[in-house]
Image (tube, rainbow, N blue to C red):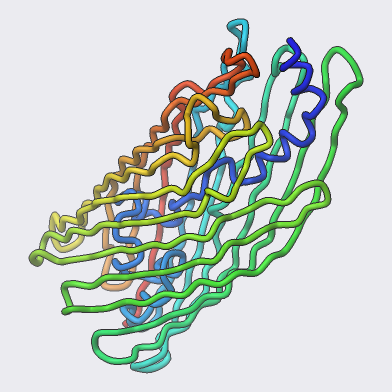
Length: 370
């Protein structure tokens, strides 16, 4: 009971901690990447959506390119609480989207820009410990990312992006049996970071990509929110005219982040493998699998604001080429996450996320003019 009372007392800080991306730094920025479970995203470089992962990849995108994506996310993350109750599904439905454009200026330079949101989620809690209603605990960021690539020679290209991030913080919470908590806060912040990348092409069928993004820290009136630095390494190889394979080795720096509820965090790593198979001249089948390590050092000492753990991404989808210029895409992905608990000072479980999951359905349209 003392732990629950402590939670109510520090509720403003605890809920604001969900601003730290909820342990979610989404790789899902384009429909084809979702179908591939993000595999090869920094080296595939087949259209302008490569901007989100590796600006150097624009060197492999000829002429003009546009990619637009409507991404539907449904989160199944019910927070079970002490006494057999629950605080409802804390994520539910979230609409996302992205748009990218690039223009090849000459045989050396390609420029482009992307607009997307892959940081943070909105959470909500119903009857939390039978005392607290939280209609909104949201921190998200929208990113505008102008980019450029430069081809040094036939094998090596470099690229850089400027990320302009518009952070949004919204918190509404009130206690149901007293006036102990009554919060209605809204704030915004703009921060800038950078992304550097390279693309090395061993041949027209084989290439690798490497990109580094430095951290971003949003400074809201009541709290700061951290998007960690990360490194993405990808490889892509066409085995033949029909089959291509690709993969990722990624790192994110979550070790410096400490949650309000005292959960110890650690760096996370991703391994991803994917394939593209050309069914015929128009239809390509994408499939992929990815494993992400947990940001928690111990799943038994988690945080009620962050449904995080080891994650397993399974994706599949299709790209259908209408003609030489236009392509329609559809993709599904399931992200299955390990359970996590929040324990009281006596070691008893106060609340837990039991096997949370994220489900993505994405529709995309791309246009390329060589």
